[in-house]
Image 1 (cartoon, rainbow, N blue to C red):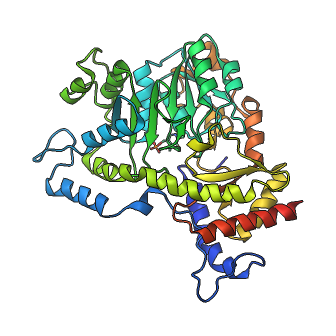
Image 2 (image 1 turned 180 degrees about the horizontal axis):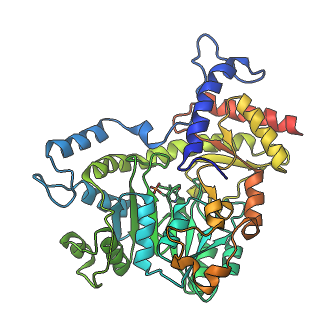
Image 3 (image 1 turned 45 degrees about the horizontal axis):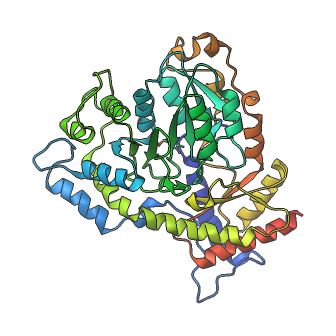
Length: 443
Ligand SMILES: *Cc1c(COP(=O)(O)O)cnc(C)c1O
């Protein structure tokens, strides 16, 4: 795929929808017409977190400015924003420890470092996910091995089992596009083969699986607070775990190897030696915004779920329709609604017709089909002798379409309908009516 890099599909479609909404709300036969009393229909899903910005974020940021203390560990004031956010976040997720970092990508790098992943190790990653799940493995000098997704659009547990070798050290279970992975079989397989489980919850912050918050089921959970996710500070990330040793190693990696008194207090002292780290420390400005966003997360998820639920309820009984498989429907955050058509040609016709009606419809967005990316197929790292691809397995492994035929087929058949937290019931109804019309027309 040659889409421009980070998250731009959402931006492109956003412009398209705004432009489309103005024209078609009054023109499309059978769609909703804007009457004099009604405002034009706005089907632009927008961004989630920023739609909830209010005085809470403003006040928290002002406090950081007024105390002149934007650094989390010291300053003229008593900086506590990141610390407070970490404590609230761990409590919300139901884990012992949380660490704020600069991005979800940084959190994944910390997870790999915490687990001691390195040269000669395999890490299993879904074939359809965001770049960072691949780059964190490459940057730890280990070998990324792709597993297929299934109709849940997340890791296929059967293919996970098939991809395990004596070298496999970990699996990254990615809760993609607002929906949880099927964690029971994934955890059973991983425990049986002694693999660590990292849960990537970047696209599913606030989601759950059988009553437990995502990120708290595996060994380590990671989150992103970039604008396309849920709660946001523009950029930002976090890592959670219940294991004090993993936490200590993640903390050391994110702060040049150090382990400050705050962390010693949390884990009851240091246990691990210093090793070479990075600087992925979160600033107080970021912590301020996140501290104000977190208490709104439940409301954001409830709003998204209400609209996604209305769309699913309205299309569920269409003859022959197949919705996205949901390992735990109650745990889905309602980021989008998804259904499957018979083939790629039908999907493309469906998208054209839906977009004519200003429906925010697209192929699956926000991630990449990694095994068919040119840089992945070429095994190109930042140095030609990068250790990931110098082992016997690294030299022989082949990426490309043959590494993920099931994922490519599933990708081609799915239609995604973005959900906006501020949609109205009128918008929900318009989306349902439009999908029903298009479904009937497709035959
Ligand atoms: C966004 C995302 C990341 C990375 O988060 P950043 O904060 O953008 O670095 C990791 N994994 C998935 C699945 C994502 O969607």
